[in-house]
Image 1 (cartoon, rainbow, N blue to C red):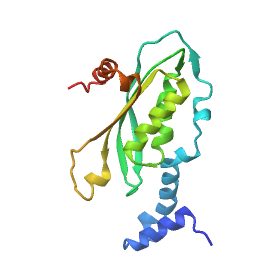
Image 2 (image 1 turned 45 degrees about the vertical axis):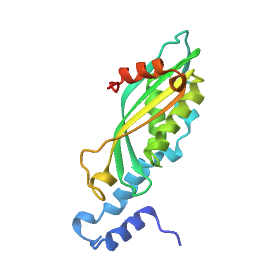
Image 3 (image 1 turned 120 degrees about the vertical axis):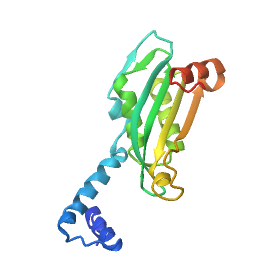
Amino acid sequence: MAHSLAENYREILLEVGEDPQREGLLDTPQRAAKAMQYLCNGYRLNIEEVINGALFESQNDEMIVVRDIELYSLCEHHMLPFIGKAHVAYLPTGRVLGLSKVARVVDVFARRLQIQENLTRQIACAIQDITDAAGVAVVIEAKHMCMMMRGAEKQNSVMVSSVMLGVFRDSATTRQEFLQLIGRNN
């Protein structure tokens, strides 16, 4: 018989030496299961449904940048959080994406068990596929609890990952403009 997620959390409490019948822990297995389902809801999301037609004709061919999109994800190695921000840019070729949809694309992929390098590429490729942009750039800066709370225990470490597609990869000038706009040109 398969255990429910809540039953599995009850087993975890027992394995770490806790008493799941203790007053403060009585509802913890159910709360933890509900939290994990929320933190991993990206598996149930579909990009087309998230975009929901919010792609608009536009003559704009200048860089569009959405910076400081907060993200929360779980590392696939330890299932501990990594928390940070994504900066996303693209050069449109006749179509622009609704502003909130850029943040929603970030969430679709962040709400899965991840490594930051793959998350960065998934966001860039999705924006490229959706918009057919001349180029897409994504930079993610994040703090990883698996490095801060255990292992190396380095509290001030920040991982930066980037993916540059199209003109952002091919043109140093375009790439530099993006990095300057997000404050990473030093």
